[in-house]
Length: 505
Ligand code: BG6
Image 1: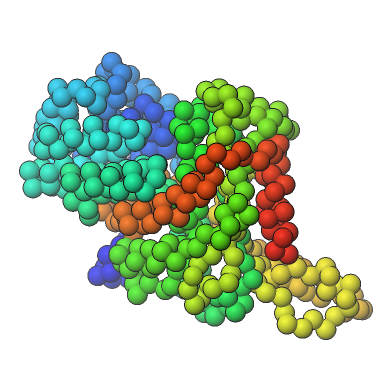
Image 2: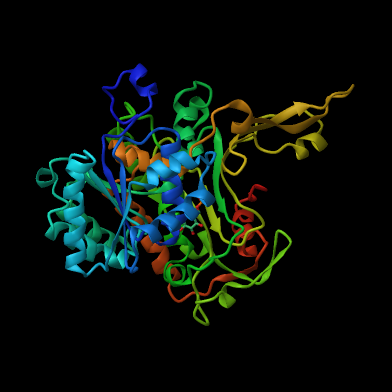
């Protein structure tokens, strides 16, 4: 996908990386156990890893390779998407190594550098290594300095490629993001920096571009002439789990609006790229991010919420304030709704309502394009009342698919019309199963394809959208909503004032 010079036939061949090492910092952490290790197993199971592939786990524990292997075994077995094959695991895990150490421990990083050198010959990895930062952002500078000091980030010195993968949150605001970008770019060449936004690795998110640009049906109506409004919803039924320390200092806007949601908005709003070259796609997304407008009155055009105790899917859920590790009286938001706009010819006047929330009734992420109503409806006024807007709904997850809603005649002897849905579901339309987002993204890092990774400019531009919101919200109290509700009432009122309502997702 990334290289425009690859022929169409090439593009269908499986992409196998060159022999290489994947170094995971923070390998005992949540992300590594839940996503990275299972992704590596799934790649191995699909035959997509190169011979000699090694995983080097780096973490503070005083462990040996054996301990690391058993943690990895549990993690892979629990999180794997593909069927379990003991022989695949045995072969893969025989190439796992653990390097214990803290991030300020020079000796540990010297040891890591020496290990990579050894592997050059032993596993034939030719100096190729990707460093995955699955660590708190506060530790980034330390690790980057260590990689710099030991020469591990140096392509020329390594004799192969050296890449770095940085997990979000990428900064806490524009200022910190810029400082971080500068630091990363001082150590690695910009083409070797992969900033992860795992939403871009989701099959349904990539399909936004296919849906828009592989068809002639949608594009002519994809503009303010036909579109009334767009609603982007990311609802989670879960709470904050064990992440209070991070979450309370971030809140929903920094956690997911700044990245996942604005990336979805950019994909929906962007112009057709001249090719699927990563730079072309990024350039188009960046233009949209730059054209985003905030509500003139942020207090009226946005709602911040925080969940109270309640019931979600038949289970009792504690309120945010009662979650372990949340400081008393915290005003951090677990819900955000905001009315954004895109100031360009295509989208002028079309509101983009974006909402994200924890402890909602169920997990659903979707993008709904709501079309204007027909200029004239020659039907019984009672029927016209019943007809909603035509809608194109891209269901990102779960029940991945696309739904088109439109009016149809009810069978019978009278001209009665009603809304119906035409439903495309991945599970029914394709026999191929979708790879997990991390599986796709880890493979992309190893083959060097940056298409699905936002660049520094996109990250910074997204902070330019979120920073003024954060500033306007300073000192305000979030609106309460019960766990198991679709956010605070104020959020419904915000749309009602404009004669609209949230879609029942
Ligand atoms: C992460 C956020 O980026 O995305 C989490 O930090 C959130 O708060 C998660 O739960 C949701 O990811 P997904 O893939 O389950 O929608």
